[in-house]
Image (cartoon, rainbow, N blue to C red; front, side, top):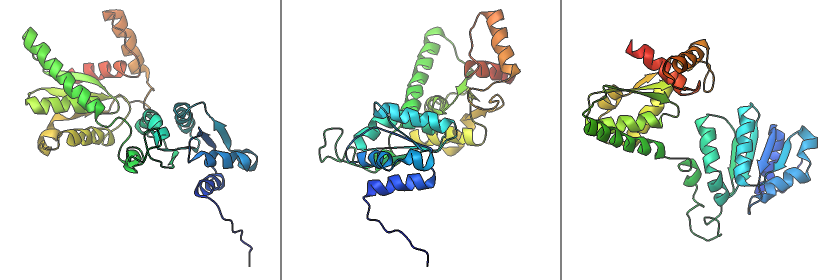
Length: 276
């Protein structure tokens, strides 16, 4: 019978050993009780010599999560670990990673308190990570309020915009504007030109944001108000072809309007062809 090794390990040590054996390419972290042993174990057992795994202590939790972001964006299997207040510091980076739809491993060895070690549940709560963090509906709310400003501008100048075009990235810009339209009951088209996502996924992200923000809005109205165009995504976020490049050059030469190839160039190109 094959001999098997039996070892008594702490939870943090088991996590670290599992990461080594699973073939993680890199760990980026910052010490914080009670998860510091994860990084300590990786260094003490020389994970780099065993599998080539990079183990780096960053200068802060913010740096660590952005290193994870960079590593994940290059296709490597990367991870970090922290504890509740540290995860809070990482929230913006986690939101960026989620928005870019990149896989990585995040470990939260939970503890109480927002940094003072109290017994309050504010950041010891499991749901901080799995149902919180990120930016929530902040983007949707911001552009819902932006719709109020559009209405005020129209009233002051005796105008009404039949169409509103814009670059749709994460989807919250479009969701907020659609929410505003539904609240006011305006008869206009709000058209999101996608810069990253294709249908049906891109449109579904917008629909989910609208449903979450306006829970009582009729589904038929939400569907009818969500116009999502995905013909200008190219190879994805940050990529573009000759059509977008030529649009950027032409608009600058003809109108003196500077566009970028990631957002406004795609939106302007989509707008021109949509209204034709």
